[in-house]
Length: 247
Image (cartoon, rainbow, N blue to C red; front, side):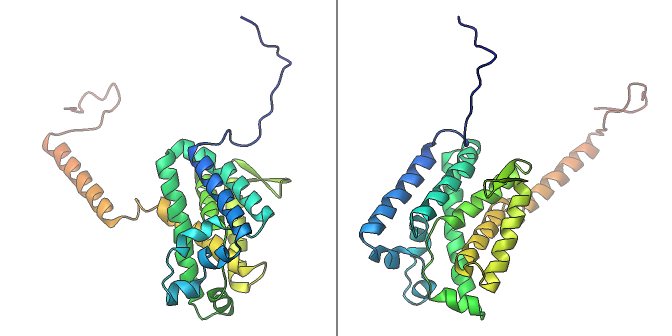
């Protein structure tokens, strides 16, 4: 058996090799991107245009817009973010739950974007007749989940400044919120970014906000307390606490 040298070091980049879901999602995005390049009319058919969803009921756009991109850098950075934040979450959750979260967040962001386009604001009216493309809604959801699981892990903003994940999400959310209503920096896309953050937060906290689940939990606690009183159960005390009964 050879002893490894103490002077040998290794360097790794990113969260590790591509997992099952990563291969499927990145492969689908790249394939559709090339199809979109060959047939540009796919953008109008599969991209999310709120006016078509509302008037023509083109509801498939709520899911298909996630696989379209506006250029090489758009898909490159989206797929890099998907791998960087999604791979570790998939290892924690499992492939099935990860894919469910990804599509619920992406489709939910699309639904909220359509609803936002119906509001009586200038940016909303502009959004109503625009085409939204890209996986950013779902990726912002992954970013929020990543920050909840690893709040103090550093993320290099602009690949230069290390910021804890929880602070990074707050900054990105504030930027998306401001840009969504001001129209700065492309308010169309930022409305979907903000929607992805909101849907992800609601989805991850849905168990806590389930009224039926909360009612069952309260009833179970009440039953346990009744049993404790019935059988005279006490918490264990100190070793010299001889007069306390434990049954």
